[in-house]
Image 1: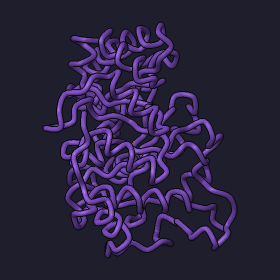
Image 2: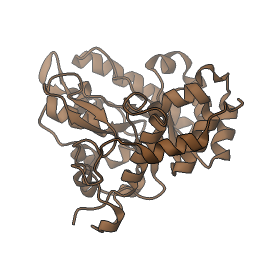
Image 3: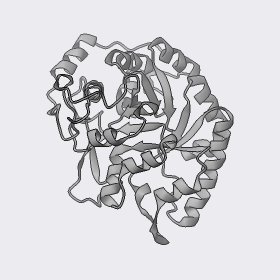
Image 4: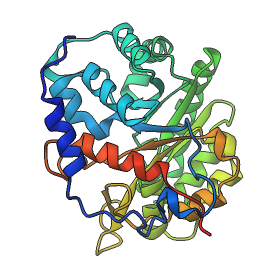
Length: 319
């Protein structure tokens, strides 16, 4: 668990001197704090990070160092993408919890595989309790079987897992990519995301909306607005992934967007969050899948984390 040595002053120089070309008032609508334009759109104390965004730093330097840096930046919530730290050494959930507490951080969720829930559900819930997180979920699609029957079977699984989580005071959630907004292969009039919402019990199964991939779904499989799902089912969405992106030339390619640093893309966060009801009940987690490789290193992904935090903090209502 010992921290590896790193030149902190060199890292901070890198953070300050980064030349990533991101406009503070980009198409996301992020205005400088001095520009006014109303109150913050992301409530104070609800800004967090999906740790997958800084996975390279965790693997290189460990949780202790990364948590210290995230706390310095201002993050207060973290969502896990695994409980290992590369070659730094083994670490237990109890040790991770102590590091969270020491740095004033709160675990608000974790991405686990469907196999983890099928084979080790109680262990996964044990770890969630140890880390003090209120929710635990998966970033996998409910199933690779994109038929009505396939989603019916998947919903039954999620309802069973969710009931077990609820019995222990936890919430189970599913995180979307773009494909969940496609249509059933045997019923092209049925959107799979709608089917999953209908078939899962709202008492037991929740959703984390990845905003970039939801907008990707609306571009690739049009006919809905992401914000309408949340406003229609606000209690089912405890978490957001606040992820920015730029459209791929072919809207049918991949997730339809390439993710980029917050503020460098075109996702209309101002409009989305302005329309959102009861903004204070959600957790807003910055994520950038490409952060470890998309900017100079050092500071690398932690530089993207710091710049993105500042822009999220300064996101204001449109005048």
